[in-house]
Length: 115
Length: 111
Image 1 (cartoon, rainbow over the protein chains, first blue to last red):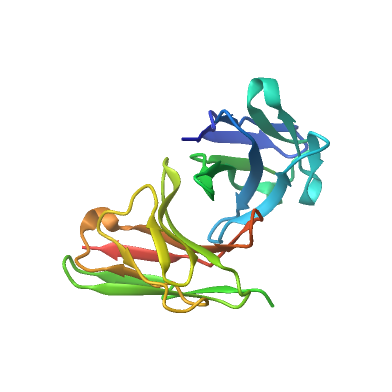
Image 2: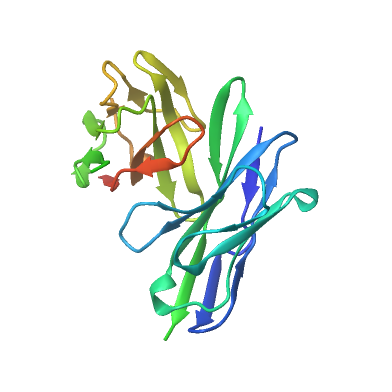
């Protein structure tokens, strides 16, 4: 069965600082990878996704993530964070599981951006 | 507009009183799923449905029931709620290998 680890539980940054959130997954086969964002009081929204091709994917609001297959990682990055990026970020993986694309989420990373 | 609609948004109930949280989608997606979100635990899948009349257990199905009698609706039923089911619940749909579309959530408190 697949699993996802997000090692940073709570990150505090000042505006304009660079961001990198770690995500590692465990699965021996082909995976699809996602980052979702949850702004305070809201539901999860897709930030970016990787299915195949260029391992560096760009998402909305200046976010990007790099898939490194050898490290089983899909870290999220942003060069310069804004106060409005304060949210909880979830990494997710889908993998074939008996014909069903099971979605597994990490435990999330809370990002607090200080003005 | 593509929507996943959950009701109610907030619910406070007492132990043992049966309740239903409704979920409805207008995207004609075959796949629907329920998750619960708890601090430090992320999202955990309760049940999912691949299509009408096809449902299966997720990672934490104990204490929950679901039904999928029609494509657009996927209600979550708690026959006898307990305080450990106090949580934030999300319904989601998905098209194929695509992204999940989430509802706005239901915050349930069981006293």
